[in-house]
Structure formats: C-alpha cells, structure tokens
Length: 316
Length: 149
Image (cartoon, rainbow over all chains, first blue to last red; front, side):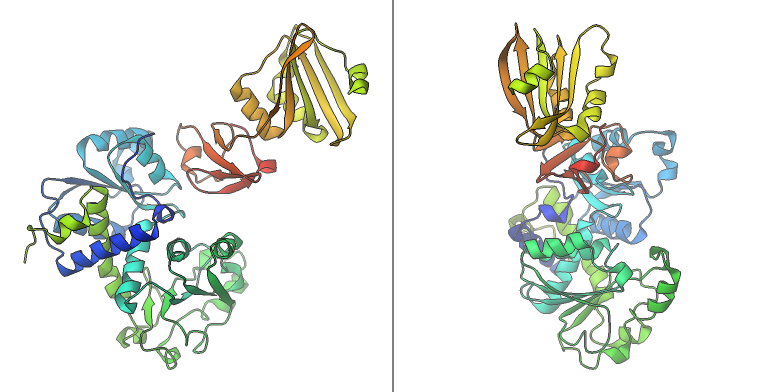
C-alpha cells in the first residue's frame, strides 16, 4: 500500500493535527491570496455533483496560485464507458499534484489514496466522510467561541443520515464537548454514534422537543434539514416537518455568544428573520470553507505552517 | 476422544478438522469443496458429544491439506476449530484455526454502496470481538452475518 499525506477521514486526525490545521486556516483568513501553489495542478474529480464544495476547493486552489483541472459531471468521463475508479485515478495522478475527489460510493477516497502517491483529499464519499466540511465547522466554532474546549453544541434535525453531524462528533472527541441531540424519533442519532460518545467519554442529552428553552444553554446550534424522503412514515413527516425549524422568536433566551451553523443549502429549516440576528453565522461559515480548504491543500502538499507564516508570496 | 475415534475411523494421511459447531458443519463442507472430492475418503461425524461444546462435528479428509487462504475462510465460517495434520497415522501438527485480526478478500461487505462492492478490488476487514469492520466504508457486521467472497 502507498503511504502519502492524503486527507480521507476526520477520524484519522489527532487533536494536535486538528489544532495545527486550525492555525493554518487562521493564516489564510489573514491573507487568503498568495502564490504558494504557483505551478501546481489541483485535479477536482466530482463523480457526483456538489457545486458548493467544488467551488470552494477550486477557489482555494486559484487563490493560492494553482491551476485546476477536472470534471464536474462524470457523464462526460470514461467512467460511463465502464472505466474503473482505479484507472481514472492512475491516469489523473500522472497529471496532477493533488486530487480532490467527490464520489457517491463509500470508501472511494480511501481506495483512491491507496492507489497512488499523489495525495487525495476526500471531498465527500457517499454518506461516509466529508472531512473538509468538518474542518471548516471546527474552524467556525473556534472563530466564534475563541476555543474548541467545553462547548455546548446542539445538533438539530436529521441526525440519522446527517454525515456532517456524525463527523463533528468524531472530531470534537478531543475537546470535551456536551452535545444535545435534537431530532424526531425517526431521525434520531444512531445507536452506534451514541456508543461512540460513551466510549470516548463525550457527554450527550437527547431531546425530541425544539424550543426556546432547549436551546437556551447552547454555544453552537448546528442545524440540518429534515427531508421528506428520509421518512418511511409520511404521517410522521407531516407531524414533525415544522417542529425542527429555527425561527427568530426562539432566540429570546439564547446566550450572546451563541452562533447558528448550517452546512447549507438551507431550505426552510432556518427562517429568513434569523439571518438578521447576530446569532446567524452560516454564510461566514461557508466563507471559512475557503480558508480551511486552503489549509488542507497546503498540508497534503507538504507545505508546513512555519512556511506559511513566513510566506513572502502574499498578495496584498 | 476415545469414543470419537471409535465412531470416526482414522486416516493414514490427511487433515482432521475437529470442534466444528454442528450448525456450521454443512457450510464447512461446502466451503472446503468436500462434495467435489472424487477419490479421497472423507469421514464426517455429526453431533458428537463434546465436553467443551456439548455437541460438535468432525471431518477427516484423506490426502488433502489446506492453504492459509482456505483456513482463513474456514475461521470465518467456523471460528476456533482444531486442525490436525496426519501423516502415517500420526498427528504431526495440531493447532487451533483462529480468526485473523485482518481479513483480505475473504468476506464481502454488506454495504452495497461500499467501493469494494463496485470495483474489481480485494475486500479488507479488521476483526475485533467477533465484529468485522470494513476497511473502506467502516460498516460493521457480525461474524454470523458474513458472506464469503
């Protein structure tokens, strides 16, 4: 098996590594435009569409001076002719310095990373992992709370299928959080993640109700969408569809430091009036995706934090 | 043991697989391809008394020895069987067939969306406390639910 500096799963990252990447992202927040990756080629292989993630990675690459190749629609590639993932990766690895890959199959990024010495960044593999999303979520928490330690994090909505909330639990295991899982029964946090919390000493409380009082102690409210297609019982969906909506009038008891995050796209789970409150932070969170992904690209390409701090290629 | 020996005849050369859970016997027979053996003698003892297992099964196969791959597959279907190599009516090697901590291309992943079910590639699992975790998608499955590649 080949060993390289790929970023495949958030579970692979130690506490120190997470904090290191946070510090790197901070540097990019200070100066996002540089020539650090001048002459490098970033391949973005999107075997399923994800406009937001792709734009964020491609912007990160361009802002660091790299060139971008790739595809946004697998229909135009040889995978429709029956080419294996292995062959696609072996071919692209010849051309590029780093491969950013989104795939609909779980474990695809890990497999790709085992095939080539070119680093692979997992930009989402099915319902499995999406580590760059988690890192930008962590960065946003750090940015808004000044620390990742001892936070009260309320996860709301679809906790059963929500890949982002599962990865967040794994990443936060290093920082002594208290989680509140707020979800309808049918979309409750799966047993395996509750066991994960118990195994790692992570405190959690489960709620079915979502109101002013349940969120009063929150430092972070992480909203996800309750989707109709996730329900086997549509009567149950009709019963709960309006329960997990965050409205402006629910924020009366919220702590001043509380910030609302959402991986986006939002549909109706956060009402528009929340956008005007100081608690809304989801658009800044999306911007943090740029800084986190600049950090990820540099890290997998072996550029250390020290070099970034002393970087003379900053474009002012 | 004496009683078993009376019930299942000795072989001159070959392999004895002992301590097979009786409910797994027919799977073991299928797995080792015993039904397809044309010339070699096979003795099968089913539901024999066992002090350790209550009921066990045993297979004695003349002139047949198994590869590591076959034994790894065997360990998945019937963990903790005992294997004896017989040469000239004497046991020359006896060992427990233990489930390895890693299985490569032995069992299939139960997750249809796992990359290993969609690419021509070997499957990989880690094993802990009778639970198999897919190296690629992390999905866990119980040893009792596995399907062989």
